[in-house]
Length: 46
Image 1 (cartoon, rainbow, N blue to C red):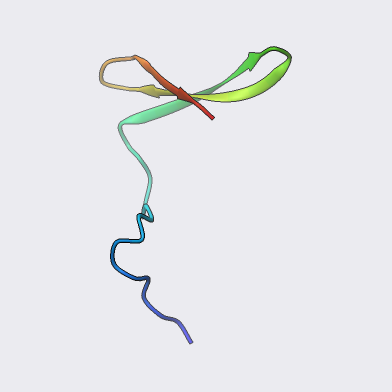
Image 2: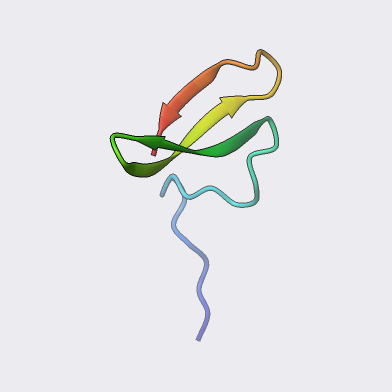
């Protein structure tokens, strides 16, 4: 039986449309770098 998620569970529904990500190499390992589309600034690494 399906149930609704509790309110306030901080789950995102849908895509984040104002960001893009690119795959980069840091120290031999590949990581994903998030970038803000409006300001073109790099935000964080995953």
